[in-house]
Length: 127
Image 1 (cartoon, rainbow, N blue to C red):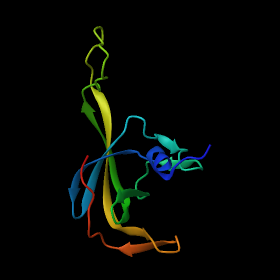
Image 2: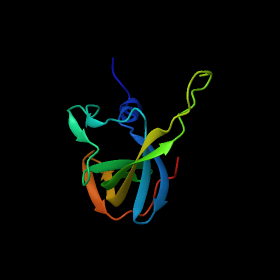
Image 3: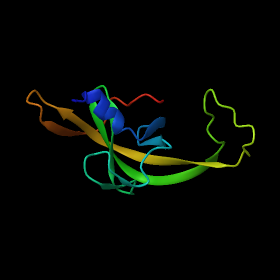
């Protein structure tokens, strides 16, 4: 059974972009995002780590970013659609956030090889 590139890319998703500035992007990490070791890239890797790299998809290719900081914020427990938790006590629920610095764009050329270009001209949308 072959997987499509879109299915492969969906498995590598770790969060949602929630803030964009020319020198920083803030990402809210998914609840299911790896914590300590990520095995979704084919081989086990440590994730998330300060000074490691992540890529953000964009219409011009992928934005290569460096992780600057990782934090936890308290939030309400995520609501599940179609379910009622009547006996659940509303305790603070931790949400992980990550600040990344955009470095450049990773593009593919006509031969399918990747090429890194410094600077970002087109930023991703939030959400």
